[in-house]
Image 1 (cartoon, rainbow, N blue to C red):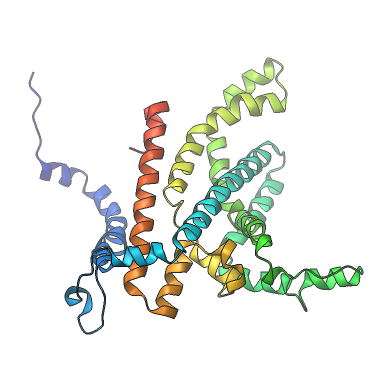
Image 2 (cartoon, rainbow, N blue to C red):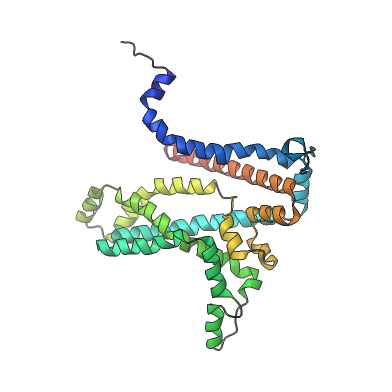
Length: 308
């Protein structure tokens, strides 16, 4: 018997409740992601305020030549990619470890209290974190140097030494993101069929064997999805973190300057709108290429675990 084919509007009417729930998210991305894409045209124009976006003269690829010829392109690209790779690896490893630990720990109240404590830093503004870091690492009155002086040791000039900051930023990022990621992994762990654990326990498997043979393999799909989403932003630095932790301290730019802070500084100090747009366009192209390649690699491994 031939099935009746329903039209587009019939499907819309049938799923109107779900579509209505989806509308705010669609509007958000339309207004804040897709409409601003029209500004890409500034990357190919010599912007001036009298002409505006539409009537400023075209200058071809001059903005890109200026960006790449400045010597800053490779530095900020390298810093952005390396920091995000470090964030992905360190944060996910710590979050998985914390999620497994909380799952295995007996005691409902202890688990809830620990979750709350771990989750609190996620809600602290980067402005506050930057102020905490300054009071901790300040050369003259910082807690760390006051302690070192009290022990008869030489103080450390952290704000004038760029080599310390990769470690500081990675640790601060891990501290702030630990609670949020732990809850996601803990939710994935609790969704694993408990009968698998019971069967393994009956077979004599100890806690470490159950973790390695059951928990970790069942977490792989969640890890792949979260890592793929993170890879999409691998060339997009966390502006709030880098700017509030480092500020405009030029002595630290060699190890802390990322594409986002470079674009912001170009706009606020040198007023190079065209070059800033070119850097942003370059950043978006890198991010798009990276997510496509990562998704292709996952599809080759297991197409059911790819994003698309």
